[in-house]
Image 1: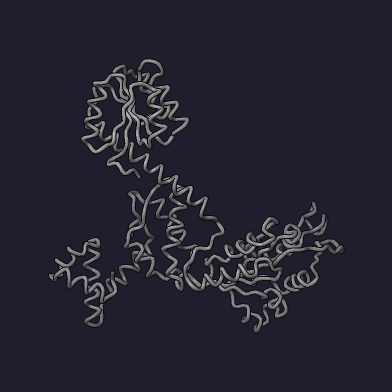
Image 2: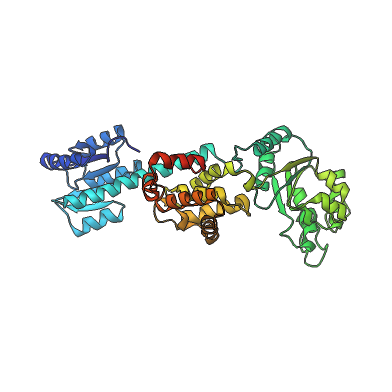
Length: 449
């Protein structure tokens, strides 16, 4: 964002009177104006100054406006170019616009319209710069493996990852669906000495039970009907790396026994083969089930449970780490703004809704909601209108539910009035018939600030 009023504009024209008139008009409108009488001088200004928009004549001595436009397109593609010429033709107008010029005016222009077009051009350039800043920030500071949190439970998890990342011990990650168990598994792998070797993820719940064994262990040609070629299993693919068995509780008891042998002996057999092969991989597992309970019920092997549960990481649900919601919202907002080429923010009311919502789908649900809102939003701010129906329905149900005590009545009145005034505290105080000082005291007393 520039610190010079409405923006910085470069005017290129070999006619000094034309430059002087346009410069005066734009300066009076709050623009910082630079002038150049020919292309070489303009190039020097563009190199030295952070110009938001260029307004150039088409016909000039030496290099012309089209050559300047080609230079800007190659070296500063984010700077919009507006043509302003006395020698306009339909052909020249079509040529400049089809090559990416922002607008084309014939002298003398309608200055009201020119200022309107210029304002749009400057805003476009600023939006492009903000998107580029977001893109650089995401590439330099973020990564798909970055765990975003300020809560003690998650910080403890990060510390555990640091402590055990280079160990070969098996790790079991537990938690509800959507809490980011695979992210933790990937962080564990890629931060370790195995990070340059494969990370093989297998969703045990997504593969049919009759295929999961061949998926993990591989098979020889002719091992069963349809096995027309040899297939390398996931354990072999993960040589010197990590295997992540997502939802390991879905494995049948017979396959659990075979997995236990592979972990104990560090060797496997492909289906249809009697030759044992040594394998070296680290096992990371996850589940949203209570495996201790399943061990007690006989549906999960106790010896396998202890083998995979050497290090246990339990990921808390999002409703227990509400302080992380603003951080996650900012991260997802950056990600989808870059993808959709938008620069938007989140309304305070939306953030309040997010902090009150229980998030049954956890982080995965939050990311989905942010993606949907970024795609749907028309303005520059996400409001409750862009949220799914369950958010608005829940908000209305909580917001207008009948209060039971005098204090609840008062809280209800203050909150409803503030919402109807779109957060304008002075207006809300007037509607309630109390002073601003009294209104602010109620906000503090009711913890509504």
